[in-house]
Length: 134
Image (cartoon, rainbow, N blue to C red; front, side, top):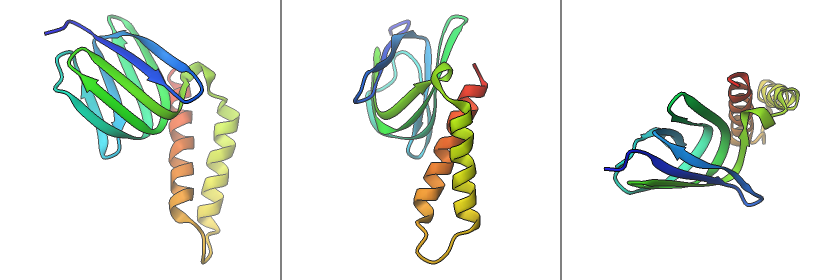
């Protein structure tokens, strides 16, 4: 069994992170998945949330939204629509997005796209949470 996992987190614009980790947590569409070296092969859809990884005492966190993850016994490849490292997140912008989404939900009328508002709120909250852990 491998002692560590190689990982890559990629968006359409750039390579966001890569390295070696002893443990990775990813937000699957139906809940979080904990990945350790030797994990059974898996392909999953990503939801909105936080990716965290750990190698020794070093750790990293990213806010991610949508995409796919391929898990192999020794490598994890994440293809995300959006991914931001904690230090890249503009907290003020994320808070404004949260406030807009909450306001839309409070003032919802017939024809309001509730799912779109819910996802916007979930994404903003995830970004704020990840940024707060840096």
